[in-house]
Structure formats: structure tokens, C-alpha cells
Image (cartoon, rainbow, N blue to C red):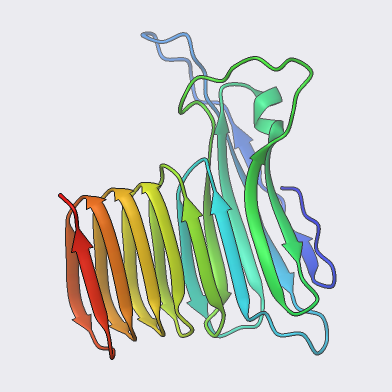
Length: 212
């Protein structure tokens, strides 16, 4: 878990790694690792009011809480240890209190192509309830809950779920279902291919559309 966190401080907690037994029908062994949680505490006088997350390699779940810090838990997987160690979760902070979390794969000694879906990282994030959240995923599930300052959500191919969120919510995905439950604010949701469910949406504006 790679971190660059100033003026915020990060305190990692030990994780574990395991390699499941080799399947008789497959020659591939997948290495898995739980990294974190990492707690990001604001410096004195700083309030974390914005959290931006970008994950190209898996799911993201964000849950609001009453504290001032952000906690990050990552579940990484790869076909071997060398590639697993190259899977990074980075954190960059801004002096105004916003933070950005992103997943990357660092360059290795040998730039061999990786099979599609062979590398992944799923993120579980606890964020201050009062922070605005922006999340982008590529081919993963996106979930947010218990937030009070709205959110911007973007998924390429993945399900979007929003539960108990106040403030304006803007959600878009290309392929996947979307579900919005207990949204108290303006909601704009757009999809190309997938189902959309709305349950208890109360705001001054609601726009929802699915192309197919």
C-alpha cells in the first residue's frame, strides 16, 4: 500500500497474504493479500471535506462515519508475488483537506502482458460523513452509503448502489444495474444498458434514464 500523505498522516496496520492450493484443472495459482487498514488522520485545523477514488482494477465500497479520518482497506490479487507487489494503492492529500486515492500497477523489470482479469484490487473505505465523495471504477461494483454531502459516481461496466445519502448525487454507467435507496437530494442517474431501481428519493430534482 503506497502512500504519499502530507499534511495528513497515515498509520498502516499489518495485513496478511495467502496462496490458495493449485486447482487440478488449472495451472494458475492466484496470490491474494489483505493490505491495511490504513487510517488517514487530518492535521490540526484541517477538515477532510472531499474524497476522490479511482480504481481501474476492482470494486469500491465507501461508507460514511462520524469520525474525522479516512480508513482504507485493500484486497489485492495477482497471479504471482512479483506482480502482486507491483499493485499499489496510492494516497495524495491536498493542503485544503481533500484526498485522492488511486490504484496503479508499477512497471516491472519485464513488461510482459497481463491476462485480462488476472490482477485486481478491491477497496473498502470509511470516509467522514460530511465529505463529498467522487468515485470512478472501470469493471467493478461501486457502493456508497451513509454520506451527507453528495457524490459523483462513474462506472464503465459495473453495478452502482447508493444507500442513505444526502446532497446531490450524479451517477453514470455504461453497462450495469443501478439502485438508489433513501437519497435525500437532487439525483441525476444515467445508464446505457442495465436496470435502474429508485426507492425513497426526495430532492428538488430527479432525472433518471436508461438507453436500453
